[in-house]
Image (cartoon, rainbow, N blue to C red):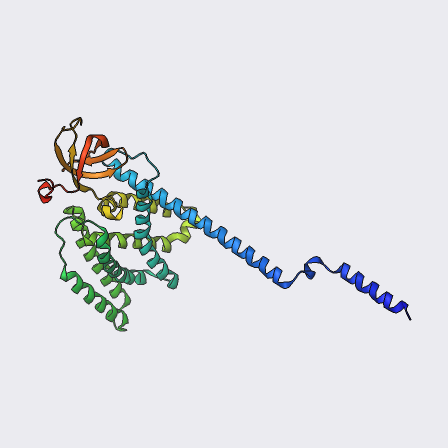
Length: 329
């Protein structure tokens, strides 16, 4: 009878020895380990994503500032400047907004024919017009900016007419599509005229950028499957580089300097007696860039910059009209 407890104890000991180690660990330890592994993977993905975004902003910003400065005959050699990231951020912002709108619409309407695309273009142009008005605070406009009432009236009437035509069962679908394209062409001509012919940068210029980026995105989304099958995957990259060149040439120079843009600032420089340029005199110019070494300026109606060392300048007045300052009288 005494052998039975001994045999039971031996079997229980052997069972404990055969039990896996992980089965003996508390459930809370396994949960904490899983949570730590999940957090580690999330942090790793976020860190890589942040690094990728920063690199994209820097690369695009470096190209934009280099193209902008090369127009005046110089390129700033310091690659570590906040203005470079700011230029890239502006490009990503004004490019990402129309891309996000078009991509979201296309994701919900993947089976779009040419009639649906034509109808969408007009409504998208009205969206871009609405977005361009609050964006004016970031840009320095040229020419006289006036509110065009006819744009608002025609735009509203066009939306109502297209909805009525599209919902009517007696009118063919192609009528609304054709009407949408005609209205878009009318607004595009009114936007291109001040920018391309009169060389003025106004509110329609911003609308033109937003609509152009969105239309190009829609074209790529609709046509990219056959392009991928043919191996022509580089077409979207070509569009992105072309958009970056346009932004650097026509839009970045009109972003206000107070928003880290490339718009020149009117200044009056007072030179020291040892200056190689106009000793003890002053000159009114446009300030293109400022570094620790000096100032890059350009005269009115000129396209090549002049570098002025900082030790040659005794005073900088941020206006080209000295008479406006009582201190300089």
